[in-house]
Structure formats: C-alpha cells, structure tokens
Amino acid sequence: MTLHTGQCHCGAVRFRARLGDGFASIRRCTCSYCRMRGAVVAMAEAGGVEILEGAEALTRYRFHTGTAEHFFCARCGIYTHHQRRSNQALYAVNVACLDGVSPFDFAAVPVMDGVNHTNDTGRPTRRAGTLRFIPAD
Image (tube, rainbow, N blue to C red; front, side, top):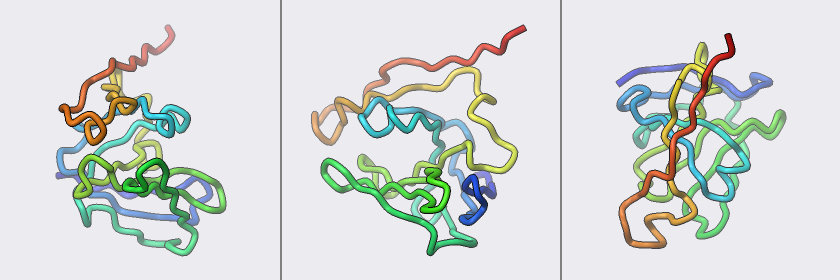
C-alpha cells in the first residue's frame, strides 16, 4: 500500500490517497464518460481517499445507473476521483492529481472495456486494449 497526496488544478481540493497496490492497478476505461475525461486512474479501497482541504469545493456527478459517483473541483473542473460502479469498495484516483505523478510516467496503461460493463453483461471485465506512451527522441 502506498500513500500519496494530491490536489486539483487550482489547489482548492487537497487529498490523501492510499493506493492498495500502488500503481499496479492503473487503467483507463472506454465508457462514454471516461472516454471523454481521458484520465489514468489507480485504485484505493473504501476509506482510502481522505479529503484534507476543500470538501465544500467538490462537486459530484452520476450518470447511467447512478451507481458510480464522480468527484471534481467546482472551481477548476478537474476530476480527482470516483467511487467505482463495478466494485463500490474501490475508488479510482486520477493519477495526474497526485503530487509528483504524471499519466506520462507509465509506458503502457491497460484500457478496460467500459462500454460492455461487467454489471450490464454479467461477464468478467474485459481488457479492450493498451494505451502506450512513447517519448519522442
């Protein structure tokens, strides 16, 4: 388990995240919302995201079944984390918000098939592909 601090772009929201398996759980998703948001996330267990400052600046968004709860800063609009739909005991944390971490730190990021979500199909989560970052020379 690794402990990280993070914040939104404007700094109004500051948080601490305990990532259960560090960055071994990084991923992206193909669902309509994640596709547009484009964030790379890592997993924290329930209680693993602690808001240190700016809880009043966090806004929530739910769509489709209303199960997943997405949090973002009402001032700068940056998505910080969300409670997952497929496992509500997990929170996905935007790695770009973590201090000293960039989504470009990861050469390969698994992309999960959120279009055919396991809660809709009854089948295990399927990997849709891999997002690769290859630095320019």
